[in-house]
Image (tube, rainbow, N blue to C red; front, side, top):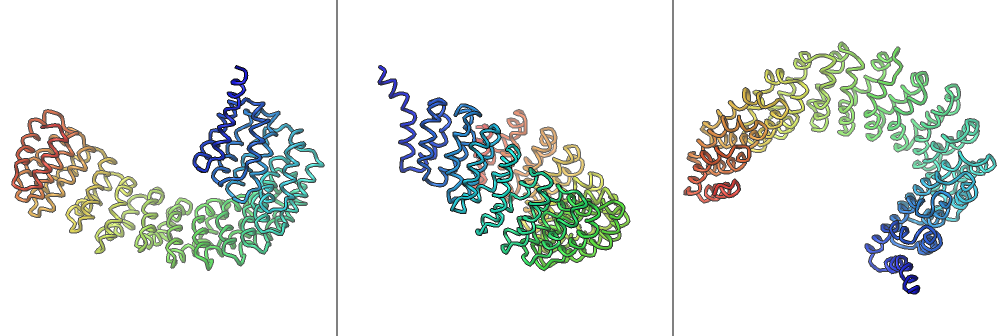
Length: 589
C-alpha cells in the first residue's frame, strides 16, 4: 500500500515530464499552462525541490512554450511557499532572461520585476541583486539587455554600497559595444532616473543621457528622447536650460527623421515637463520646424500635436504665439502633398476654434475647414465632419450653416458617386451635431433625394442612413417627416423607386415600432403585392418576412397570410419561392 502511495505522489511530475518530452508542441504548451495545478498537487516543498529544478534544467524548447513558462513563473510565489521562498523562482527565470527570442526575454523580465516586490530587502541583496549583476556582466548581449529592465526595481530597497554597484553596472551598459544593449539601456533610462536620488540624476544620468542622445545609432538616440521627458520632470527648473535643453535642441534637428519623429510624438509631454518659459523661447521655434519638416511622417506626428501644444501654451501669450507662429505653418499643412499629414491635421484643427475664440475662427480657421471639407482624401473630410461640434460651440449654428453647409451640400450632389456615398455615411453624425430642427430645415431634402439616386449603392446607403436617423431622432419624428415621403414613392412610375420604398420599410420597421409599422407601412406593402413587375412582388414577400416579427399575430393572420398565400401561387418562379419562404419563416403554414 505504501508503495502505491509513493507512486501516486510521483504521478503529477511523471505526467509533466512525459508531456514536456512529447513531440507535439501543443501538448507541451498545454502542460506548461497547467503548471500551477501540478504545483498545487505536489505541494510547496516538492515544487521547490523537484519541479523548479526540473524546469530550470529543461529550458530548451519552442519559443511559445518558453513564453508560457516565463508568464506562469511570475504568478508562482504562493505555490513555492510565499515571499520567504520566492527566491527559488529566480534560477529558471534567469535562464529564460538570457534566451535568444526577445518576446520570451521580455516576459521573463516582466515576471522578475513582478516577484522582485515580494522579496524582503535582505533577500533582494542576497539573491536578486547578484542575479542582476550576473545578467549585466553576461557574455551574451541577450542577458545584458534583460538586466537593463531590472535595475529600477531593486535600486530603491538596497544598501548604499549596493546602490553604487548598480549605478556602475548601468553606466557600463549605457556604453556597451552592442547597439541592442545601449538601446535597452536608453529605453530604461527615464525609469531608472525616477528611482535615483537627485544628486545622482545630475551627476550620472545627465552624462549618460547626453551620450545616448549622441549615439551613432538612431534607434538609440530616439529612445533617449523618451527618457528626456522623465528626466526633465525630475530636475528643478533652473537646471533644465543647462542640463537638458542642449540635448533636446539637438534631437529636434537630428539628421535621422526617426529621432525627429520621436520628438514630435512626445512634444506635448516635453512641453509640460520643461514649463512655460522654455516652451516660449525654445519649443515654439522647434515645433515650427517640425511642422515644416522635409519628412511627411514627422510633419504628420507634429500636426497631430497642434491642438495639445496650443492648449498647453502659457495663457498670457497663447493667442499671439498661435497667430504669429503656429497658424502660418498650419495653413501650409492644409494643402500638404501627403494625405496622412492632412488627415492628422484635420483630426485636431477644429480644436483650435475653442482656443482662438469666435472672431479668429471665422476669419482664419473657417477658410481652412472649407478647404479640408473639399479635400480629395475621404479621411480628411471625415475628420473635419466628425469634429464640427466643437466649432459649432464657438461660432454658433447659423454661422456654421452659412459657411460650411454649402460645401457639404455641394459634395452631396457631386458627380462622382463615391463622393456622394462618403457624405451619406457622415449624415447621421452631422445630424447628431446639428440637431433635429436644423437638420429638417437644411438636410432632410438631401436625404430624400438620395433615395431616388440612379446608383444602387447610393440608394442602399440612403436607406441605411434613414434607419440611423430614426434611431437618433425617434419614431415620432419618423412618422411626421420620413414615413409619408417614403410611402409616397410606392406610386412612382419607376419600379426601382417603388422597390426602394420596400427597402426603406425593411430598414425602418424595427426602429419605428409596431404601431407605425402596422398602421402606415403594412398597408402600402400589401398593396404593392399587386404590382405589375415581378421584382417588386417578390420583394414584397421578402419585406413581409422581414417586418413579420414586428407585427402582432392578428395582423399576420388576417392581413399578411392571405397576401403571401396569393403570392405563393404567382406565375413567376421567384415570387413563388420567396412567398413560400416567408410563410415558413413566419410560421403561417
